[in-house]
Structures are given as structure tokens and as C-alpha cells.
Length: 357
Ligand SMILES: *Cc1c(COP(=O)(O)O)cnc(C)c1O
Image: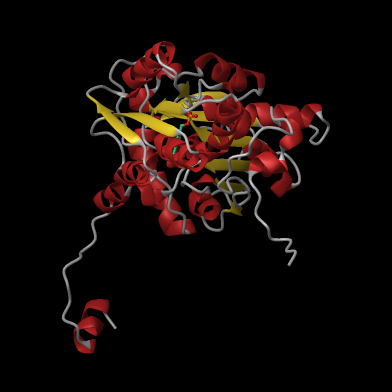
């Protein structure tokens, strides 16, 4: 039976804008086409009732982050080019995504992770999808250096965002934002780690403007975590720190292109503190019913900062990209909110008493 609800991956949907041919073997897990959900309560709670705020829920991709958009293309091209094995350095989500798509394509997948700094759910995913996991005694930036060297010396294809197909796949998220809103947002707020995703969105918005699908492009506002804000400070950071492990990066791979994306769009790259990240993270849960990982909340934290300091007008149409799913990091969710989990007697009266009813 034909159904209009058939979910196709983003390569099929946006084939004409992507570097594929009819003979590219498409490796898909049904990624893309994620919801764009309007905020119901946050604008009023913040005191900006005219703000039109939308969240792009990238945590609803098959492995729970936007990384799947780039990975479907990177792995499809790797298969097309005859690769047998892929490798990546990862703070967690790239490894989960690479492992899933590599497995589907029948490729071997190696992942280098900074030991002790990967959220539990992400590690569980990479294990579950059958990658060979190599925790290293070093941070992400060191892991990426090692990956580059290994790729020079051995027949493995790198699927980090230095792989040119990653950002090409990721730019499809901008197409979807435009299609869901039926126009471009005024501002796009997005977390910045390796700074690839902000470049990918800018490529997508620019293309749609060039094609006349939109008349303008949004201003790109990217947000690093303060303890890892290499671009904001203008120099690499040797020991980056932040609660947002996905953006705990001291030497962003797409630094220059990200700076260009911000300046060409009349936007800005700024930083937010861990405290601001966590408060936005909690607000998403308690005010909007959205569970993201802490790194993702940097986009909302940054928006709040730029509304307060007047950088973003209070009645703007804004899209905040929520990059990954909160279920990946249950530890942080439990740590940041203290709830009493003492068991209650399994009796109605005891429950009523505790419930205050
Ligand atoms: C990878 C990642 C980021 C950072 O994206 P970049 O392209 O490296 O700037 C942010 N949030 C999550 C959840 C991620 O997985």
C-alpha cells in the first residue's frame, strides 16, 4: 500500500543539492526531517512575549544527534569510494553516529574517545553498534590529531567534520528550517564546538537565498562554552573545560569558516557560562517539555544572553538548534536537579500524604 508518511532519508530528499550521483549507494537510517517546535512558555517567562521562538529538535535523529545528517553522506561516499574502514575522534555523538552508519554499510568503525569525558549514553551507543572503541589518555583535540595521522598511515577514511561530506549533509537542516517556517528565521542560535555545524547551516541558508527560495538569510549567532571559547578568545585553549562535553573543544576544526559565517551573516560568535547552559537546560525541560543534552542548551543560553544585552531584538523570529538528545546524558540530568527519591510505602494513604492531597 502506498502511504504518504513514508520516511525517507535526507539524501533522497535533497539529492539535487548534495554531491551524489545515481550510482552513489545511499546508506540511510531515516535521518533528517526533525521537528521544528514553537516555544509555548519561554518567551513569556523571560519577559519577551512577542518573541517568536522555535526549536529544531535534532535529538530526534536516529542516533539522537544532528551528526546523522553528515554521517549518512560521509558513509555513503566512503562506500562509493571503496572504503573498508572508517575512523573518528569524538566527544561521543560522532562516534555513535559513525558506528551506526558504518555498521549498516558493513564497514569497520574505529572511534577514539577522550577517556572519562564521554556521556554514558553515547558510549553505550558506540558499543551497541559494534564499533571498536579506543579510549585515549588525552582530550578531543589530541584524539583528532591522532586520527589525522592514522589516516595518513593506514587505509581508513576519516569521518570527522574535516571529511568534506559531513558539512554538506548537515546543511540540509537549514533547508528544513526554511521549509517548516515557510521563510528564513531572523536569527539562528546554535552551539559551537568544532564549529562545523554553524558553517553547515550558513551554507544551507546561503544556497536557498541564492536560489531565490528565500529573499534573505538569518544572522548566525554561535555560542561556545566559556571554558572552551577558543574562537571568542582568539587562540586555542590547551585544557578546555565545560559541562557540555560535546562542545569541550579547544581548537575548533572549522574555526575560519565559522568566523566567516558569523561575519557574512552579520551575526556573532559569543560564549556562555556553564551556569547559563545549565539554567537553559533545565528551563527547556520544565517550561517546554524538551530534554536535550547540556551542550545543546548553549543555543538557548546564548539567545537569552543576546536578548538581555539587546544584541537580538525582543520580537525577532528565532530558531534555536537543539543538537542532541537529553537521554544520552542521564547523569547530568540527575545531578543538576536534587529530587527526593526516598521510597514511599506502597499504600494509598502514604502516597496521599507525600503528595499533599
Ligand atoms: C557535535 C555537537 C555539537 C558541536 O557541533 P560542532 O559542529 O562541532 O560545532 C554540539 N552539540 C552536540 C550535541 C553535538 O553532538
